[in-house]
Image 1 (cartoon, rainbow, N blue to C red):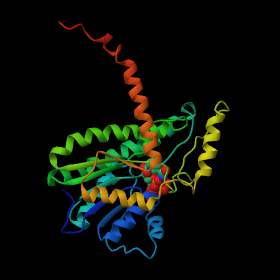
Image 2: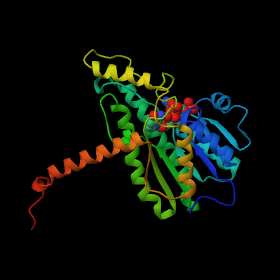
Image 3: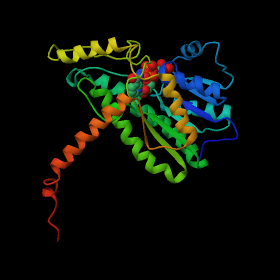
Image 4: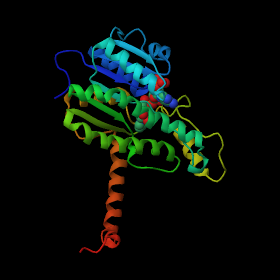
Length: 286
Ligand SMILES: NC(=O)c1ccc[n+]([C@@H]2O[C@H](COP(=O)([O-])OP(=O)(O)OC[C@H]3O[C@@H](n4cnc5c(N)ncnc54)[C@H](OP(=O)(O)O)[C@@H]3O)[C@@H](O)[C@H]2O)c1
């Protein structure tokens, strides 16, 4: 049990002016915890929180997550203000919908800068604190699309698969220091994720992929009818950290569970099909 029971916990949460991040900040402040909330716009965060949420324990931090120095400074300000750090939530992320061949080099760099290099900047700045105090929890918000990939989501999935890979390794590395790690895998949640404020699209498209154009249109129309409730999603994530109990992967949403189950079945079939032939490349045993 590493979550502090005798004092307010201090959380460092990225991507907080909208969606799941905003809801996490709201609920954490309502619990009486301390929250360092990174955002690209502190004004947007404060106006989204409104009057009903007490902000005495909030440290809004305008940070470009791609800037390692800025991230380190944000973490320094967090420990200076609150005297420590208990939980890190790498939540910032955005969708990008295009065929693989329509995805530019800049699109790739932008996505991986935020979803991989940005997370790594946060981890490099925070892990020494958690490791040395031999307590803490890292929550990396992935997606069910960190487990399974579909046409039109290649770049987003590349970022989330990378996040899953580094997070699995991290969990194994820091367990001996008493630091817990959770990968969160939401399905569709009713946040701003599928609005044009958040979702990115390619600059140029070809007419070779009408099914992808149709998929994009359908996803923009999904806004407001996604299955996942961000209030419940944030609550379940907080409960997971407070209890310290649960598997590495936290599936959020019955849609996520169904997609993940289908992926596991497909992998099983793939492994079974390879069982008789995988060994043909082995050296003959001496
Ligand atoms: N909603 C879903 O259906 C869904 C499904 C699976 C996974 N997820 C994941 O859940 C996390 C939260 O997303 P959400 O659903 O809450 O979406 P959201 O409402 O669009 O919020 C995304 C947050 O990420 C930050 N962000 C977006 N683009 C960014 C960029 N280029 N650089 C830095 N920060 C950026 C924003 O922070 P600021 O504007 O404050 O900087 C924003 O608060 C993301 O990692 C997303 O991939 C969402």
